[in-house]
Amino acid sequence: MKIKIIKKPSWMTGAPLEKTGTKVAVMTGVFALVITAFAFYRFGDMVFTKALDQTELSALPLSGPELPSAIIENTTDSQSKSLGNNSSPPTFPQGGLIQGGGGQAKWGNNFFADYRMERERTRGQQIELLREIVNNAQSSGETRKEAQKKLIDMTTLMNKEMEAEKLIVAKGYKDAVVIVQPDSVSVVVAAKELTTEDRTGLTEAVAKTIGIKSNNIVVMTKE
Image (cartoon, rainbow, N blue to C red; front, side, top):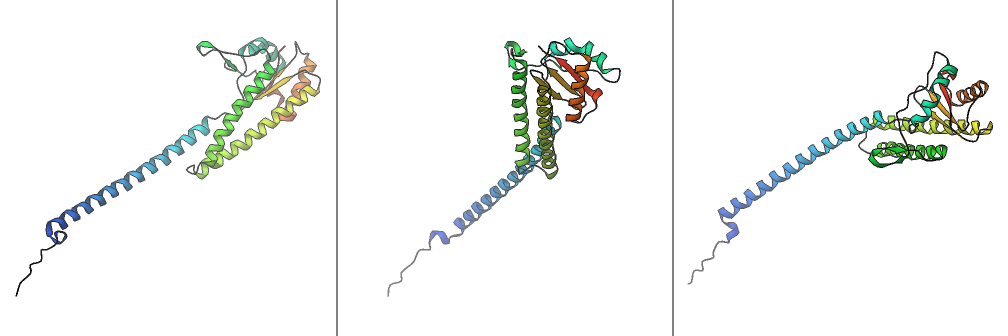
């Protein structure tokens, strides 16, 4: 009678089993680290997005681009007299539409068309930013609500500005732009000069359209 010796398979030996267990433990540890890192990343991303949204919203202006300083300088004295002691023309930093060398800016020959074009471009960027915040799934409910409110306010503001500009043109003026600031409204009319009666009529019309007190409105001229 022959006795057949069967060799024990290698996978049944103790050492390989120990190695397999070690590999499983290592893989489990790595997986846990990946999950933890991902959780920290998502949390940090959410916090950063919320902070960014809040910063952008607080810094986002509703007004249009700045007026060139030459218009302000040429009308400051006369406007201060016509407005009385309770109001003064708003101070606009120097700005422009056409970017030149060295970071300087210039306005084109047609101020009114150029300003409206720049205003449309600026507002378009602001609206796009607000919509991104509203549609961002990581934006908080409060941030999204504030962005939606700013969108409504901006749309209302744009409609009032255009309505006031059309009203001025309907009065017989060649062109005009209306710039609404937080506490004041500036009106630039295509004219060489205006009488006191002309200024009063324009101020009253714009005040009624925009919904602001007359003493917070500045009327300027641009040939």
